[in-house]
Structures are given as structure tokens and as C-alpha cells.
Length: 372
Ligand code: G6P
Image 1: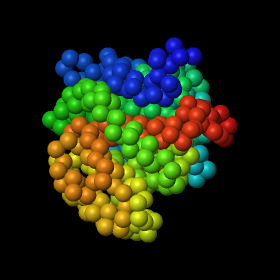
Image 2: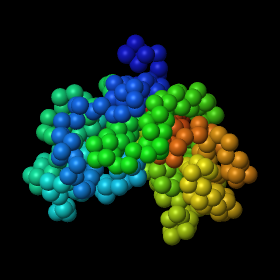
Image 3: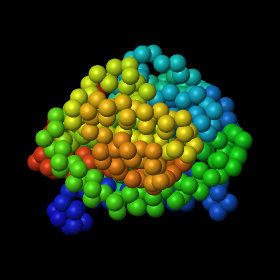
């Protein structure tokens, strides 16, 4: 009913709008006044976590993209090797797992059969499994050694939005917590990250307030056949997520690429007026990556692409090459996915509407897939 949708036309719009609160709620009570993490709910003893020598993330769909982003944070902050694998592929390749492996299973519903089978396999090999889940008492947390719940609230639209952002929060909390219990050098950077995480909900709110031009742009692209997405570093999984949203909702051919791979193949796809969305890393921090992406934008534009550039406020280098410029607040590199994903959700949702598609219930898809 209209009331359930809180005045929005679709659950998806409501859930996109709820993201600042979902992010804040998932942080709530988990960082104390001194900036330390209190994750008592993660019932794997610190003694066990100190012995871990590898992290493996398993998930499907949007949750898999959250896992891909988490890998950058986990390896950077904990120096533990981290693999991310599609749950449906995981157990069939005879993965190397033992009691020193921490497996993180990410699932909004907690009922995805592929993810459940992956975690069962991991536990059979003696690994500890930590679930990151949005649904209290669902099967995946019940079968795991521990669970860290995301507090997104019920997600109704089939295409995941707010759950994704809260999965990122939860993964980052786990990464920082691993650092904390393992005594990773608790440098200024980590302290700064915790501070920045606390302000990320406000940054998401600000992005939401600037989405009208993105909606307008989406409407003008309603008759396109293909949209490509490029990104680097954590912007690469964001590009994959942008493409997935477009497939799910707009039924358009969409692909995400690592921008560095452009020259190894995808650049052959570029033709006159092809929309290409580029997620640009911050010019601060890893500025090498920023400069490389700016050359990619130049290259594809020289070949006729219509460039849709997502770049942080104050990044002037991209301006000459952007046919459409979407500004996002400046954040540290690892936190950019929180703000860069939002315009891609809005873009896909509006394109779907413009094409007359059912936004909340896309054809052929289910909210949770309980078969393998
Ligand atoms: C289905 C949904 C996707 C979701 C995926 C994983 O395919 O349509 O939106 O990302 O399952 O779901 P989960 O509940 O495990 O996060």
C-alpha cells in the first residue's frame, strides 16, 4: 500500500532514501566514546581471531560486491590475505580452508542457498564462519559461529540498496575489529577511519539531496541499448554494482570493467554516443589512480563515448572530459563506495521507471533465492 511505501511510489525509492539511517543504525552502539569497537555480539573469542591467517568472503549478487569492496579494506587494515568468492563457485573448486580461516558469509536475507551451502562446506573443513546478515534468526546466521547484524530494516524491493551500504559498514567494522583484537598497529589512519565512518551517513544524506540531475539524465537514456561502467580500486566493484542494478531494473545490457582493463579489450566496445559511467577515485590519496582514470576518460571520449563522470567535489581535472558530471562529497578512498553507489542506484531506478518496468519486482528475479 501507499502507506507502507512511506509516500514513495516504490519501495526501492523509500529504501534508497533510508540509507543514511540504515548506515547510522548499523554503526550504533558499536563504537565507544574512546573510538574503540565493541562487537561483543561477534561470539568468536579474540584468542581464536588472533590465530586467523586468512579471510575468505562468500556471497551472491549485490552482497558479493560488498565483499569485493571489503577485501580492499580488510587487507589494507589487517594485512591478512582476503579472498572473495561467489558462493555458487566456492565449494565446487575444493577451496583451501582450515581452522585458521575466517569465512565471512554476507547475505541480506540469510536464506540464499548458494551462500548457505558455501558456509556449510567451510564449517565442515573446520573454519570459523561469521555471518553478516540483515534478517534476525534466518538460516545463515543460525548455522554460523557468529553473526554481525546489519540494521537496514526490512528491505522489500528485490534489487538491494540499503542492505548493500550496511553490509559495507559491517564489513568495515569487522576489518577494524580484527585489527583491534590482533593488535595491528593502531595508527592514526585507523582512528581517522572510525571518525570518518561516523560521518558517512551525513555524506550519504548530502548525495541524496543532489540526485535530480541524475534522474533527468537517466530519462534521456531510456532508449539506449547498452551502458558501460568503469572504476578502479574500490570503484571497480562499485562499477559492477552499477551495472548489476541496471540489468536487474532496466533490463539493459550493462557491464562493469576495471578501468585499467579498458585497453585490454573493452575499449573495442566504445562507439559514438555510448554512455559510459566512470567512477573517479579521489585526486587526494591515491592520486596515481585518479590520473590514470582521467586519461581513460579522455581516451573513451576521443572515441565518441558519452561520459558520465562521478567525481568528488573539487576535482577539477575531470571537468573538460565529462559530458555529465555527478558530484559526490570528498571521502577517504576506502569510504567512497558509500557515496558513489547512491547515484548509480538512483540512475537505474529512474531508467527502469522511464522504460515502464516494475521497479520493486523486476521480471524473473526473486528477493531471496532458496535453490542452488
Ligand atoms: C538475489 C537478489 C539480489 C541479492 C542476492 C543475494 O539474487 O535478487 O538482490 O543481492 O540474491 O541475496 P542475499 O539475501 O544473500 O544478500
